[in-house]
Length: 231
Image (cartoon, rainbow, N blue to C red; front, side, top):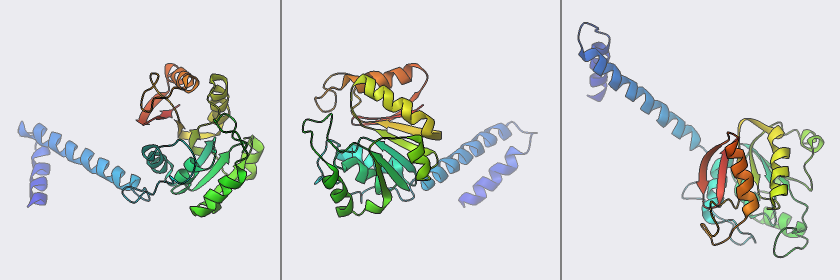
């Protein structure tokens, strides 16, 4: 019955002798847009965790379950660059759905309340959560290392390194040339005001992100303290 209605609308839309043709065309346009939206939704939902997402809360870190799920959704099927891994909580969330992840971290806990060697803990957590084979690691990002691993351009970069303004700016500058056209940047610990979301405040992250936005970048979405930006 519904298909017969659309067929009738198509006939009316092509009959320019009646004013009703314009109304029919409007309805058909809406139907077409709806089909496109549904098609995109179906494509985006492939391999993206929803209710079955398992957050690695046994891994030390500050990422929230909401943020972890958002990272998994953003990373689905993509080549991902992560700057700042700590013990692997965010790395695991990314690697669950990503094509591959390059984790960049000196493995000494710098910039955290508890500086220490995290290498053994990091790789142990990756193995425990079944994503070890999908993650490469380097202590510092270089064009040569990225080329050696044959990553090509990254479709997503998650920046969660040292939170000083100078460091975040440096991470952005290093990342942008490695980003694929249409690629996204995701920043952890972005807040619009002190204490927002979780009572904490990292002004260097907020200022660096706002500088990008002031220069024309687009804030795509926010998930707790994660800001997703299209540069």
